[in-house]
Structures are given as structure tokens and as C-alpha cells.
Length: 453
Ligand SMILES: Cc1ncc(COP(=O)(O)O)c(C=O)c1O
Image 1 (cartoon, rainbow, N blue to C red):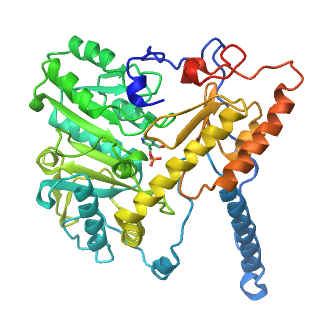
Image 2: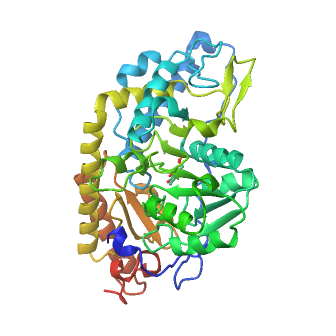
Image 3: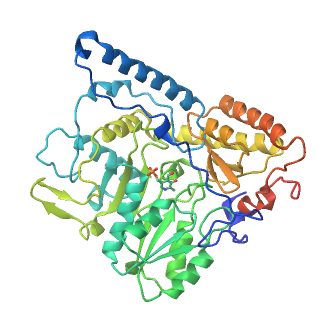
């Protein structure tokens, strides 16, 4: 299903609650309580240094942990993390406490920093999103969430009485920002594809024409990988009477912000359009081993937020104080190694493999949806939490998804689908239980339940 095909379709997701179809809302299944299996911190015994017992104990705990990480990495499909990592060259830097506290462009008095790498990375992203070096301010964040918190905060500082608009399928960090900053927030309906419904957006804008608009635009939603139509959002604002100096757009590109520029014929996220900021996660498609992200903001907006701090001898325009100085090194290393060409190949592989997965699911009679620009394959939620946990699937209501990242091979997808088919025989084979109808979530055309086959 292409996004263009999806655009005029009926809206299914309301602004305030998730639509679970005919089933009654199910309770959220929380993960296991880690307190039961945590590794206690204990006081060393007096003779530990002599016997070496403590060292041996800790080494065995870490060895077991490493083994479990290898196993969990092998079976991971549900979250948008590229687990294909090779950062051996950076292990020599692990013993340094690298901290970029304060502004990336102004050195603080703390000298063990990596700003020279951070700014190189920021320039790369500013070029990708078409903003000149002297026109942006950005920084390497702790994660996509921090980028969203920053983008919305800049919007709020530019328009203190602005109303925040975000589709109801936006990441929860957007609504967290609204709560943190005590902003009025309008949740906008979505189309079946998961992208923002601009008719509803227009209706909601019309209710508050007297207030500036701060808009979160999703460059890939969390659950369905849907890309909001940025051009249509801008046109809707203009048509509703919002001039460019009365709105601020933040683009949440946590996963897809770095994939879309490499998808042929995809619409462009670019500062040539009237947007204020873009954020992306660094541990998702790029594949950093620790959470991090990149935030790029138009320089003209940043003065509304920043303050000079004498103690740092630097400027404060970020959300956090101390900032991870290792993350820029990992980002710099990957960008240099792969370059535009490397990312393009990886994006193409992910999209190909996502189509393969969708094809295998549908040929096995399992309804699935894959948005045109995305590598997120949505399908029915497995019945069995153990299976969900084994493959680390992300679930919401009646649906689950696999996000096909560069480390996910055809072999792994085959193992997953084969096991899912086997398990479905157990769940549904005796006819007592039927596979769920996912039409309310992904549309009748994509559903293969008994009603919609
Ligand atoms: C659309 C979207 N925005 C923001 C985030 C938050 O990113 P992070 O986990 O890096 O904080 C996610 C995470 O999956 C996401 O899907």
C-alpha cells in the first residue's frame, strides 16, 4: 500500500484513544520484574584482594552476561536498532572520561572533550538536511527523546503561547514534552497508514487561529513507520491562514530521519522548507552501541533558549548539562566509514528485506502492512508472550511489528516466520481460537482473518 493510496482512506485512530477494533481494550502487558534476578552489589570481604575471589566472581558474572547479550542480540527483531557493530578501533578511548558539557561550538574549561568530532558530525547532518554551517545550531543528544524535548522546547520559547499539534501516533516523548512544559496540546487523528490526517489537522487548527502553532511532524512513526506528509502539513497551515512567522515545525526523524534521504523518490526533509528543527537517534539506523542522537535547529531560533554560563565558560542551549563525549566518536567513526554510499546500500537492503518479510507473512496467511517508505512490517500480535519475548517484538493492541535493520538477514527472517507458522498451528490449529482481525489497525486490504481473507 503506498502512502498516496492511503491518504484519502477512512480515519481509524481517534485523537484520544487507540482503536482496538471489536475486541475490548486489553491490559498492557508489562515485562518481567528485574528485581527478582538483579545482580546485587555486595561489600568486599577483608581478604578478597589476597584470595582474588571477588575478581573471579565478577569475571564469571560478566562472562555469563556477555553470553546472554550474544543470545539476545541474535533474536532481536522488534526495536529499530542496528545491532551490526564493529567499534574495536575505539576501545582505546574507553579509559577517558570524555564530556562535552555545555555548547558543542564553544569549548568549556574542561579539556577532556570531543567537540572537534561532535561539530564534524553536526556539519554532516546539517549538509544532509540542507542548512549552511553558519545557519544552524545543533548538538549530540542522549537519544531521540532528548531531541524531541529540545525541538518542542525551542518551539515553545519562540511561541510561548503556541499550541502543540501532534498526531496521535506520535512517540510518547512528544506528549511528555507537552506535560513537562505545560503546553496545550491537540492530538490529531491519523489515517490507516499511521500518517497525520491533514483534514483533522485543519479542523483543529481552525479552532485556535488566534494562537501560533507548534507542530511535531513524524518522519517515521514508532509503530507503523508512517511518514507524515511535510508538504501537506505546511500547505494546511498556509491554507488555514498561518503565515510562516506564526508556526514552528519540529521533525521527529528518530529512525527514518537518516533512512529517508537515501530512499529514491522519497519526499525530502530539508531546511529549505519552513521547518525549525530535526532530530534523529544515533543508536537506531546508524548503530551506535549507546543511546545517542542528533539535533539540528535553525540558529535564528536558538537565542530564545540559550544562556551564557560563567562556570562553564560556555553557553547553555542544551537540555542536559554533562554530555556524553564518547557518542560523537562513535557517530564520527560510522559516518566516515560508511559515507552516503554505504548508508544508501544499507537502506536499500532493509527495504528489500522488509518486502521479503511481508511477502512471507502474507503467503503464510498472516495479514501484514508495510508503508511504502518504511522497513517496519506490521502484523498480528502473537498469542504467546514467550514467543514475543524471545523475538523481542514491540506490540500495541492487536498488532506487533518487526523493524528490519541492516543486521537482520533473510536467514533470520526465515527462522522467525517458520517459528511463527509453527506456533500459530498450536494457537489456532484446533479451531478454538481464531487469528485476530487486524483490519481496524492496518485496513481490510491487509487483513487475512476469516472475515477478510
Ligand atoms: C518516532 C520516534 N520518536 C522518538 C523516539 C525516541 O527515541 P529514543 O529511543 O532514541 O529516545 C522513537 C523511539 O523509538 C521513535 O520511534
